[in-house]
Length: 161
Image 1: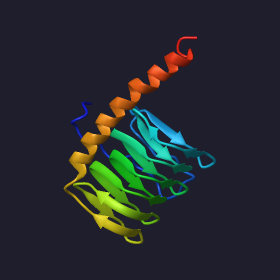
Image 2: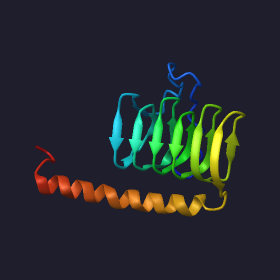
Image 3: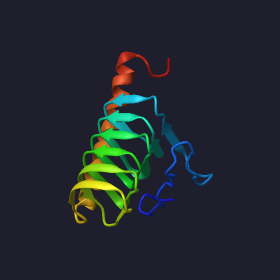
């Protein structure tokens, strides 16, 4: 699937004990409820967050699901975003943002499509026009970070050893 094609949202059940059902061909990484990450998270596959992230989550070509026990204190930028847990920060998606009934979101939401279930808590602003520009910047920054990390690894002698 090319980066210009839209991918469906990652299905996440309301009960965090059940794992989401995703297509067999989809590669998914999960951050468990006992994991606390400080710093920016990037990936080249779908991501399910059940733990805590203090920092930005940047996956411009993939989906992010914040499960019922998940918490993100930072911006989330992805193709699709589904929230069952808590987010304090800006959500930007090129396809759709879904706020499920158990979600608690505080911040700005930028996406051409937004779904808010009854019971979801949302405090902030909605801007459907800025998603494309924000996604372009995220892709550019992601490309800048990858060579820098590889260069640092080679300089420290940790690559290929």
